[in-house]
Length: 388
Image (cartoon, rainbow, N blue to C red; front, side, top):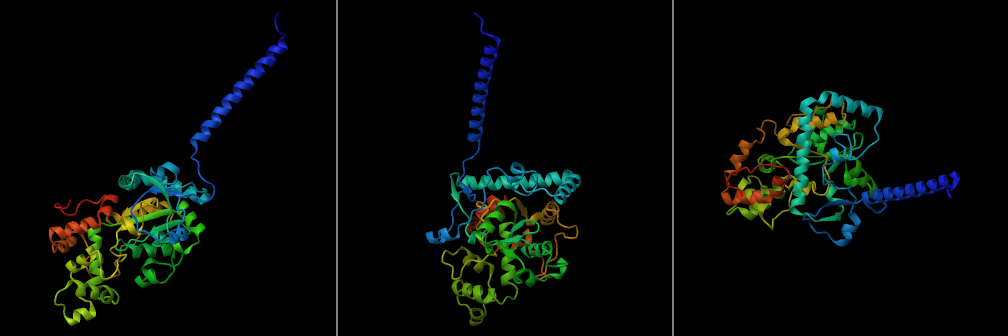
C-alpha cells in the first residue's frame, strides 16, 4: 500500500533536517579546530627562546608585559592590508585617503621597497628560529621595552639604536607629535634630554601591551663594526665630560702599562685597541653602554615583532618611505644634518677599516663574534675576509 502524499513529505522533511543538522555540526567542528585556543584576558607573546640575562623570579613576575603574538610569517602581508601596521585597525576616512595616495604614487620603486622590508623581516624571523626553534611563551620585561619611544598621534614605536641616526629620529618624533615647528630648531640636547618624548616603560602594563599589539614598531640598524667606530670617535676622540672620566679613566687604568698621571686623572686619549680590550673583557672595569651594546640586546628583536626594519646604509630612503606610509605631513622629511662634531667626516666603511687595521686578526675575530648575532639578524656581510 502506497503511503499518503503527506506522509512522504513529512519523511523527506525529517531526512533533510537530519542531513542539514549533521552538516552544521561538521562545519562548526571545523571552525573550532581552525581557531587557535587562547586563554581569555591579555594576549601573550610566543617567540623563539633566546639567551637572555636571568632576573630574579620576583622581578620577572613584577615586570613581565604581554607583547603580542610574534608572527612566524611577516605581519605586513599576513594580518592586514595596511603596509606597516601589524594588526587590523579602524580605517578612517583620512586613513583611506592616505592608503589610496600611497597606492597611486608608490609605483615600482615602492613595490621594491616593500619587498626589501619583507625580506628583512623574513631573515630576522628565520635567524631567531634557527638559534632556538623550540617555542615557549615569553613576556617582555620593562627593561626590554625601556629603549622604545612612543609617538601616539601616528601610533609609532621607535627603538633607539645609538649611532644609527637616533638623534634625528627623536627630532622626527617630536615633529610628528607637534612638539616643534622645525627639525632644524631642535638642538642635540633638546632631542635627548628635554623629556618631551615618552618611553614605552613609562606607561602602565595595559598601555604597554596595547601599544605593542597595535602600533607600528620601528627599528633601524647599522653595520656593527662601523657603529662601534662611530661610537669610539664620538665619545673618546672628542672632548666629553662624561665618557672620559667615567669610561676613559677606568680603561686607561686597566689596559695601559705605565700610564701617565695626567691620563689617569682625565681619562683622555683612550686608543681604539684599549677600547676594544675593554669591550671584550668579561670582567670590565666599568659596565656596558648603549652606544656599543648589541642591537639584539637593546631592542630584543626576537621578542618584539618589529614591523619595519630600516638600515642606516639606506637611511634616507627607508625613513622617508616609513614617514610616507604612516601619513606624515609632507613638510616632515628625514633630516640629513650632523650636529655633533659637524666638521668631522662621517664614519664610513673606509674609516672603519682604518681603525680595525690597528687590531690583529684575533682581536678582529673576537669583535666579530661579539656582534655575530647582529650580523646574522640584519644580513650584514663579513667586514674582513679572514673572519669566520
